[in-house]
Amino acid sequence: MYPLPVKCPVCGGELFVERLTCHQCNTVIQGEFGLQRLSRLTPEQWAFVEDFLRCEGKLTRLQEELGLSYPTVRSRLNDVIHALGYEVKSSAPEEPAERQAVLEALAAGQIDVTEAIRQLKQRRAG
Image 1 (cartoon, helix red, strand yellow):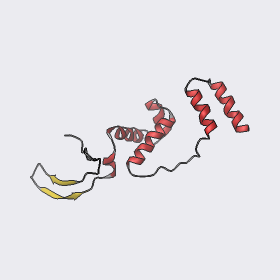
Image 2 (cartoon, rainbow, N blue to C red):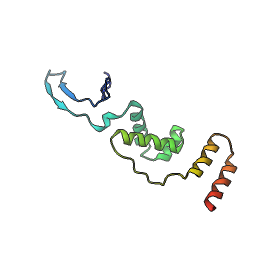
Image 3 (cartoon, rainbow, N blue to C red):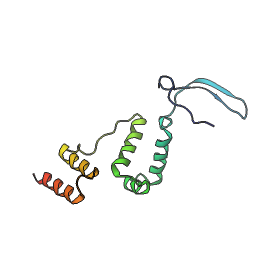
Image 4 (cartoon, rainbow, N blue to C red):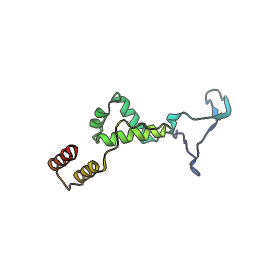
């Protein structure tokens, strides 16, 4: 069996089920049936949800098991939340631009960890 498509391949609109058939007794039910929210998830999002449940919803455990950074795991969770039609409420304030610049320089290898810590402490104290 193929996975149930949930978006129209032509326009991207939402699809509805109009006919259900029982292969055992040949009963046919016709009408317009909406799809459940979870059917909106991509196969990758489904795999993430399964891993998330297996890790009992603990993002740090999921991070370790998937070998991903915490922000990446959090981003994937936010993608699932959005796909289900919900809004993600930010629990932490946005990173100040200066702090983000230090973290980006560290990620790009422009500074080392010691220098990044020094700069972050300096910005916090200043």
